[in-house]
Structures are given as structure tokens and as C-alpha cells.
Length: 263
Image (cartoon, rainbow, N blue to C red):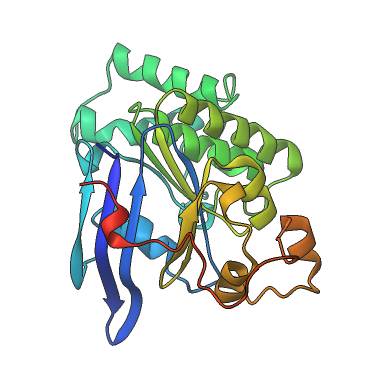
């Protein structure tokens, strides 16, 4: 069974359709990069999987309980001026397990330390979150999502504003989690980074244009449809798009079809 299966999902904010007939499967062991232009519906899709956005049609099936999904929101969505420590911030990820108004126990503190170790933040437990750098803040949010040892991890633009060392540390971690059997999906605007590091790519612009292994998504038509990337773009060359010898009269082979998804 796939960790997440999205079938014919549409969603709208008022009269504005954001997602339309989206079909996608995220398997255990996948590190999937969800790419698309601004306003393409990437964040909305993550929130729909979490059950935070009402659907106008379609179904979303997740392995286990939605409450156990690890979620890392965009960094600006967190209140960094709130006067709590790193340890207390990560502990908020266990509130659903501990229960409201109950004190954490030894098991909870051990889980926090394990999560901080995974993001290389041991030793920062007592530091106020307002004193952290951008990269440290992002690692704390990832630890907060990992503190319940989720089987599914959803990440919304985890690399925005980070320096290269922080990006590389988190990329290694996400790949390790996928190798351990977790299902990892992240939205990102780093097209080249996603093609180099993710095991699967899903290109979305209101609907899924294509999905598959990075090497299978070299057809220029896909990138022209999704991002308006043309042959003379430096990004086209960096992505290794295959312009020579392709037949332009056919639709891309990797376009997602609903019947191709697992049942």
C-alpha cells in the first residue's frame, strides 16, 4: 500500500480553483520533490493531505492516521518571537501524544533529544528560539516534525533562505529518512536541486503534469508546460533537457493518468 494516494482531487478557495483532478501516489521510501510555479497549488496539496483544506471532489488515502503525519510548515509561519526554548518548541510536536495540560514524561524528553540529534541540534535545548539563525530555526522545525517518528513527512519549502551547509545537512537527512522507509514529500522552488537529490519528482500546476524518477522527466515539453522553460534557457541546459532527436508531435509519455495509480 502506498503511504499517500491522491485520486481526482480538486480544491478551491471561494470561486478560485487551486487544484483540479490531481492524481498522485507517494510510496514508503520515496523522497519526492513537488515542484511548480508560484500559485500552482503545492502548499494546498500538502494541506489537503493533512486534512486542513476541504476538497471539492476526489479522495485522499493515507497510511495510518493523519494526526501522526510529520509536517514542516514554511519557516515564516512559526512565531519565532514567542519566549520558549528549543526543547519546548520540539516538545510541542508531542502534544497530541502527551495530551493537553499534561506534563511530558521521560519518554517524551528522550524523544526530543533523539529528534534534535537527527538535525544536529543537541546542545541547543535551552536556547531561546528567537536567538537562532535561519538554518537552526529550520532544523528545529524538522525536529519538531520528527519527534513522533512519523512514517510520512511533508515539508513545505524547507530550504528557503538557508545557506548551502544547512541545505546539504537537511538534504542528507531527508534522503536518510527515505532510505529508512519513510515517505517524504517536499515542495521546493529549487528545480535543479530537486532533480539531483530526490528519488521522484511530481510537477504540478493546478494538476499533476508529470511524475516519475528524475531521469524520466527530461522531455522539454513537460518543462515548457509547467514552467515556460524554453530551449535557450540556461535552466534547460542545467536540467539536462533532451531537445535533440525528440518527436515534438506527441504528448509527453510521463503524464500521470488516474488508472496508473495503485488501488
